[in-house]
View 1 (cartoon, rainbow, N blue to C red):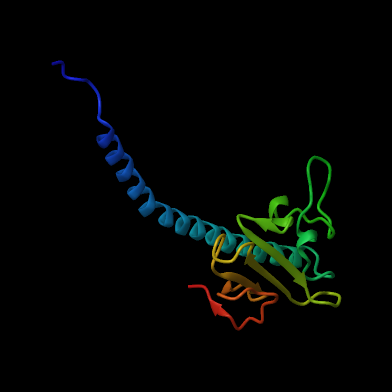
View 2 (view 1 turned 45 degrees about the vertical axis):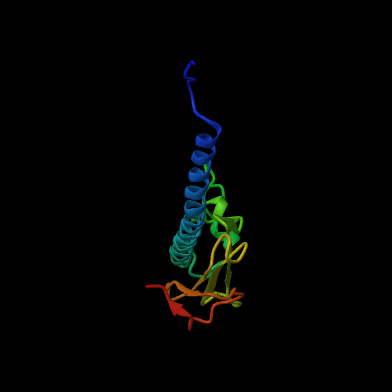
Length: 159
C-alpha cells in the first residue's frame, strides 16, 4: 500500500474554517479603522477650511469671509488669485465631498461677511462616519453625533 502525498479533504476544510473565523474577527476592526480614518480626514478638512477662511478674510477684508467655492480655484502659471477664486483649498475639498464626508461652508450675509460656518456630515451615517463636525469663525472644531445643517458654536468641542 502506497502512502498518498498531499492533504486530505478534512484537513483542507479545517484550514478554510480557521481562515473564515480569523476574517470574521478582523473585518469589523477594519471597518472601524476606516471610519476613524474618514473622521480624521474630515477634522483635518474642517481645519483647512478654517485656515483658508482666515487667510481669505485677511487678503480680502472688504469681502470678509467666503463660501466654499470662492476658497478654491485653479491658480497656475499667470493666473492670479482673486476674491472669486482664491486658490486656498484644493479642488477635491471644494467639490464638497471627500473621504466619505460632505462639506459645506457658507459666509454670513452682508459686506463684509463677518462670520462663516463650516460643517461636515458623513455621506452614509455609521458607514463612512459616526460623527458630524463643524466650526464657526472662532476656528474651534466641534462635533455632534447627529447630522448637522448648521453650526451654532455650542456643540461639543473636539478634544
